[in-house]
Image (cartoon, rainbow, N blue to C red; front, side, top):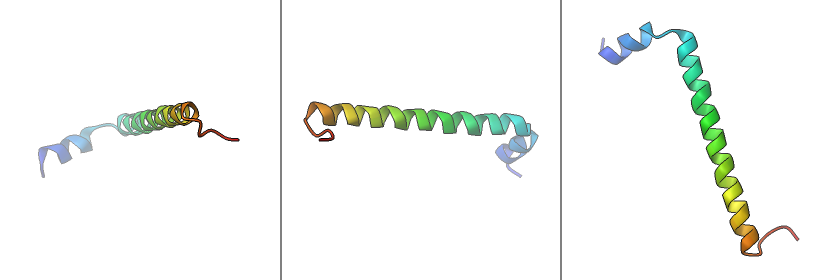
Length: 50
């Protein structure tokens, strides 16, 4: 077995779930920021809803 597989087996489930949720939350927040930025740029260019 490789070292990373052995180390992952020793990592508690709660810690792995914490990182999964933390990364998912960070990606959702990053996507929200990008979407808001695009919306701002489109409004500045006059491409908003009519």
